[in-house]
View 1 (cartoon, rainbow, N blue to C red):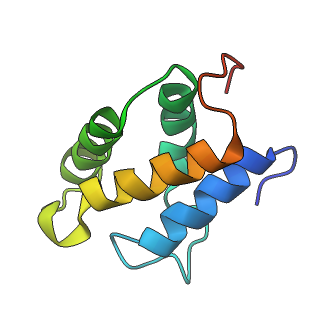
View 2: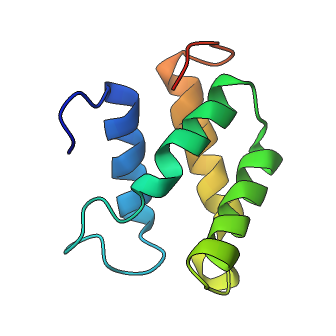
Length: 96
């Protein structure tokens, strides 16, 4: 965990590490940090589940070079949206 990281980033990092689409989260805790700020920006600007799913699919294909199907980005989008809704920050305009 980076110093000065807020609770939202820490919680989202935990979700991404549980998802672990490339299978390295046990060794590299910050492997998916490249998705934290873009995801939080999308969530804070009101992105819907389909938009989050498209972002995750794009990251898997273009950034990580993976076939998205085994990692189920749409299912992960559902988890992210459920977490975001539970935080009560839906529709927040705070910056990432």
